[in-house]
Image (cartoon, rainbow, N blue to C red; front, side, top):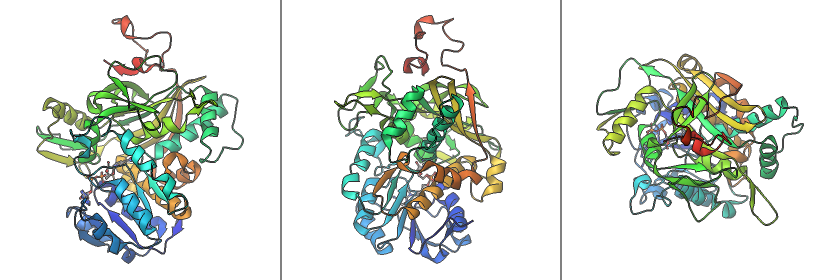
Length: 472
Ligand code: NAD
């Protein structure tokens, strides 16, 4: 089914696992001739996929110095820049698109190469918090301009829409249904729903069980999506949206001292920070608290303030990621080498033999305890649904497709975050690509099975304190 017709040109910057995975979805669901699409990328990787679909392929890395000269001739008013690259500043691309009157979408707020680990910057300055602040600072000047969707993949992205649907489901199941869901632009109304339900904590709770026929070798980093992307964010300080119910900052926790103040950072890499979490199929598990844009945007979006501007409600929000088992081994090896990247890297695709990505949101603290809502997509289902994808990439590429279509349908929205986009429309477009979309309640809390060996570790009075989730 074609969801949209697009008469402009579309430039894809970067053509790695997400770029290659989304191309067939774009051609399937958007009415755009192949000769109006151009790929600009830094490697020959994917050249044969571009050729398979008859897409022009330009091999040229975008840099601080050349990006405007490289992209401007390919883009004019009404065209679309789809940024699926690493190492290119999203904020600079957004500025260029506002100037050229071009639509834009990316899946992460990315800095220039080296930005995640630039030690001339403080940990706060190189945080996702700071990068998100720089992106949303463009909102004012972009008002009424071409739509720039910031950070709309699976997570960040799709999970913001899962949160909205989860809130509506919990409201329905606790006897307080929301008859007319407010528009996504009405932050206070959505925050009011979350506050009324008593949601204290939101995890992006993900368990990737995909395994391949080739085990990880020593000196090799293996993952089901961008190795560079994962290592980059895993080496950033852990970050989390900081809820109004939290009693005390963690000993290594810091506020940023600028911007929306919805989040804090910990003085350690996310890939060495573990938290207790839960998904329906895996049950209790330890996940990495990797910094992500949605931890901050969700906490900011679901904030209520009194007349004096003081915060009266905000949930704690963060990622709790159990990547595929070979990626866990890869992180262990990376940490042992003091975060010096392994000489080899491998993105798992055709060698995957089984497994699924169980990706959802876990809303906790309400009347029914914990509620997970999300997608269970097996590798077999992913392969049946679309070429050039595994289960992890398809959850991302379906959401990229939905974000692109939403931008085409709403072309004058200026700078927009995932939380500000109509969740029902996005979920409708993504549905055929998400496998089983399910919601499950649980009595699980991070105190389950605890307090026997080390009772001093826990705050038994309130299970939903971050202190209880953190693995120390
Ligand atoms: P990948 O590593 O497979 O591919 C990256 C692509 O960018 C490659 O084609 C590479 O050649 C290209 N590239 C690198 N430097 C470039 C430059 N200077 N100019 C132009 N192109 C350049 O990564 P991926 O898995 O496809 O992920 C792409 C992006 O999407 C990453 O930023 C990643 O963090 C993000 N991502 C987001 C989500 C989400 O759910 N929000 C999920 C997966 C990936």
